[in-house]
Length: 376
Image 1 (cartoon, rainbow, N blue to C red):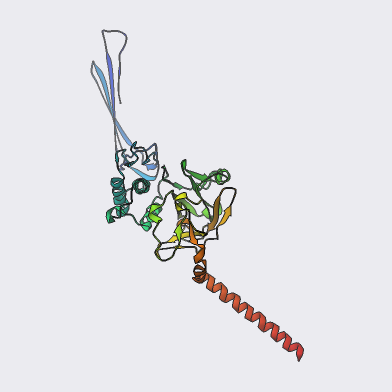
Image 2 (cartoon, rainbow, N blue to C red):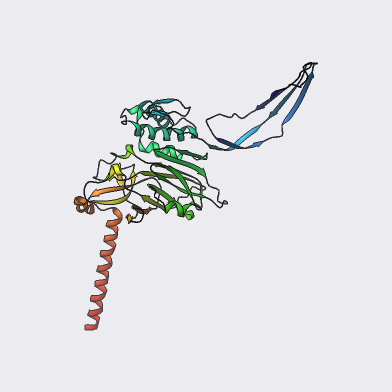
């Protein structure tokens, strides 16, 4: 730190220079951030002070050697890919405006290799969605990111606190402080306004609003959770043609969630979902709507573990709940194909029918036996 003090007198000038040098075993990387907080455990430092004085200046050098270990890193970034004046361009994390194709290739490289930091992965997710929405999505293998990689990248954001807002998506990752009066429960997005987090103090006003999509996890389901990540994609171009096995079509934005638990034991998640039909996905035929998740293993939309959506006329949206976390969306199926859909029953449906049939048979046997005994 160097400062110069100039007195009103013209006959003399006093200059003071102070230099501070710190040597530490830990390294700190610098990214574009608004706030960076680090919690570290540091041993007692050893400090030596050397002072030399001349008639014109005083130089003091502090040299400190210590050993520090960073245990938790909390970062909030102000990155958004939407700052470019040209609508066909997106901004890289360093602020450079590039074509949407270049942005897609850049972000896909980070996500597909998975070599970046948590902040790099978060920025790449936001950039990738903005890029594929600003231009025709490239089908080149080097520029395409699979849904499984998108979900996996989100799950890796477990050591940071970050919020990224853009016109096309909203991402939030945050450690959960269960002693706090305001715990993160989910996220919501409204087209034209962007996304916001949902906490236990804002859940009611958040849901009683004109949101395009929202997801809220029951607080009871988060008791053994140490961090929560959510990612909302307003126009999920990459999900439009992922189901090649059914005639189900996308009807809404996509919301995905991920958690890191304190223990390895897995328990069900009670997540409430709220979907408005997106104008670009509005069916032009009579349709039935389904609350679905994308089943990566079978490459199809699946309703297992989710309730049938109920229409809320007050907010013009469909509401449902599921008992697990992954990528969710409102899906529609033509009414003309409901019969064939009904014939393709899930294992749980078949088991339920078998159980009910056995129960009826047993009941009839009891009745027949009772009648036979009375007749004797």
